[in-house]
Length: 284
Ligand code: NAP
Image (tube, rainbow, N blue to C red; front, side):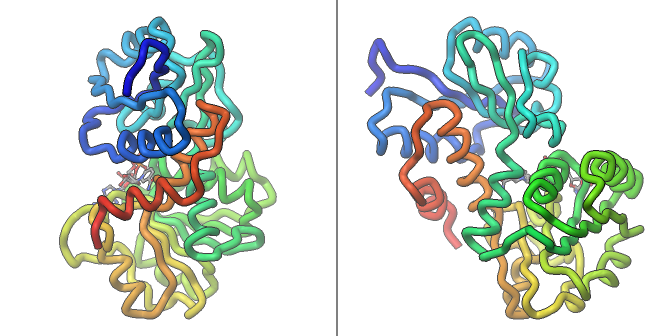
């Protein structure tokens, strides 16, 4: 029930109607008995600055930021947390007494999901990562903070992978970075890899094409696909067939949401509730 005292949290994106965050966040807010409501706001790119000023003027408690605004929102905020600085993108904003502070919980959400679902510890690990967009950037920063030893990146547009490696190598000099010229070259590097992550939207295509072949991965390697719609991508189907431990991006979505919930409300959501809500609406 919405009262005169109810506080607002939102999500801005374009489009935003596909977002699973409203149902996941409202379930957790209700379970905790907190007097908040989480609402979607579809914001066209030309209105981003006005929308952020409007949310601030309305005194919302905070909001999530999704595609295509994660980088573009940054100049409209008052302050950036270190998580947003190192990822170069914001997915969570807190309104702290009129100051908008940007955070990035995507990367830490990924690390939490890897630990929870695949028992994967990044410390000392060798990781192959496909993609060089915003999600890759957040993921690499969080994996480096969590102690990854070696990261090799392949991207459809090779120059973007090279630019990302150069940026991250400056920030994390203890990590050994490299780029693979293309996806086939990456396949040749998989023999000593502990984890392969797909950070591209490739798996959203409902067909049997492969982004990389998993034949060279060691039997104890894990495979993670950030895509969660469809819940089983061709990459995950391959991993399943090869008996490799694997997970889709639903756990990451839930974990980034749990972190945001605590940033906004100061409370912890009930353990596992967000993931169960997502599992119940995304059928395998
Ligand atoms: P982005 O910044 O637009 O980057 C897209 C990436 O995908 C780029 O590396 C792009 O390569 C690559 N790509 C797109 N289509 C491709 C294709 N057909 N073949 C090969 N590579 C292709 O997007 P993003 O923010 O990084 O998001 C990427 C994916 O991660 C999306 O599917 C998003 O839903 C997912 N994601 C999931 C979560 C979660 O919580 N599970 C969180 C964040 C993002 P080029 O550089 O060559 O264009």
